[in-house]
Image (cartoon, rainbow, N blue to C red):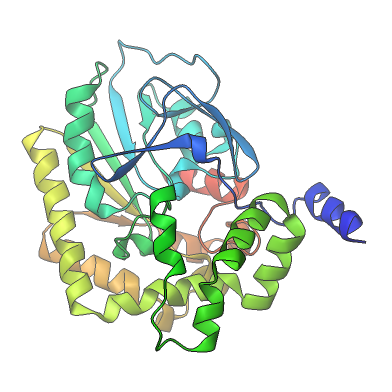
Length: 312
């Protein structure tokens, strides 16, 4: 029965495996980068990178040196996990405009890294870019790295003696390792975990409370300001695009769930900088519940990528 249902879930693509190959990443200055010239599996799809660690559609893909170029910064959403590169909104955008689009997105990247990366890429790569597009998600207010490196895993297993029994179970080393393994290997595990814990709601609640914390909002504002200043210093055109969470769109964008967008817009208004918030577009979509992978809190389906590419 286990094998049968595992096959069924994979055949009909009901859930997406959530694992990523550790060989995709390396760390420099406490920032996670994609390794260069690799072919690995991420969320069940093959992923290829070029000599700069940018995601590319096929091995040995070459950008046109004579064209203007755009640098894309973001996390797993703009990286396009679980989707072939040609079907991501970056891949589709590249085919629609007469420019190079460098997708430097890295799983787990966050706002604290972007101002450094803009300067780093501008100085490091030979193919110069004139524009930067940064894709924001609501979890960007959580400034911890999203990719856990091997040397950091021990921190997950330690716990305060005062923590309750449930929290201690969640931090059990064996159970954590088993969770990491199964979410990478078993669609059936991902399915049951998603329906029993309401993953879209769980992930939304995990970070949404931070938008009520003045300290977190001030830190968010400071990082945005640094990114703007870094881009201006490099003479670059900069655009920010905000994408919503599945829990918001699945609940018809109830105003009670839109507090994060309100706070982010307020920060951009204070800084007098344009923000392109796609939330309303998502909420107006007649098929909005299919914009994300089933049971996934934030990652876009093929249909979702197609929709975002049309907005771009």
